[in-house]
Length: 294
Image (tube, rainbow, N blue to C red; front, side, top):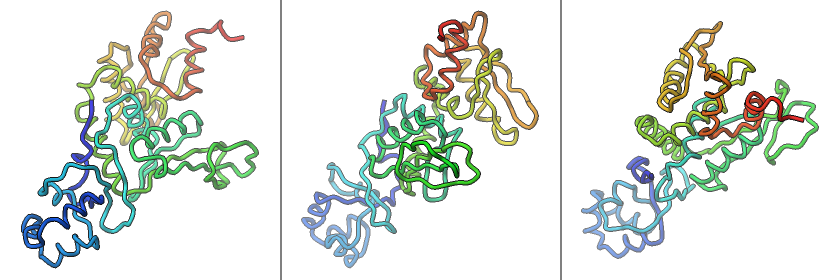
């Protein structure tokens, strides 16, 4: 399953390639101005490469080659894949981002203290936009003496553990990513079970804790977390997994994936899950195989 990348970008997105420039130069100025709906002076700037045409204008031309995209106010051009693969990695990242996002007006990203989570997040973002455009950063405790898995670091006095942040500093990519999220979540219940569980696994990696007797417990703020918990609950139930009602615990809301009799429910979830938190997987393994540890 795939989504065409161009369907996710705004029509104002600027486009560039040598093939596009050659096409513009080959079309007479007056004819090109009429096709694009702009003045001839603007058309001459397009043909000279002083300005870039946008996606909306490109659709009016007979062009089917590859090109890079960017924004008018930026000299940075990006190269996205022609189609976005709807796979478990992407669904996991979206679920995880729903729990541990790190966003601003000009960037989008995720954060976590686990190396396995950080590495996986970097890989999935890199698949979408290229490794060179993904920033791998770490905030370190003041007296940190270990080894950080990235080169870009800074000291934060209030940190007790290393916190890794994976970010893409691009307004255009943020627009693209949010549109991917919107399209996927709009039809989330219609996707195959493995993709639904990948989304849930990402959210559990971000927001859940593993309890010895009660199983996997997912917490959210009571003010704005009910919708995502209802979505996760419905997905788990749709996959024939037993979950509790959403309950209030102090100032939070809590959803529990029950272990079930002889841990059968938890085993069933793990057989189809896509968890990447090594700490959570280890804790669940202890529940399922209590006598297997040395």
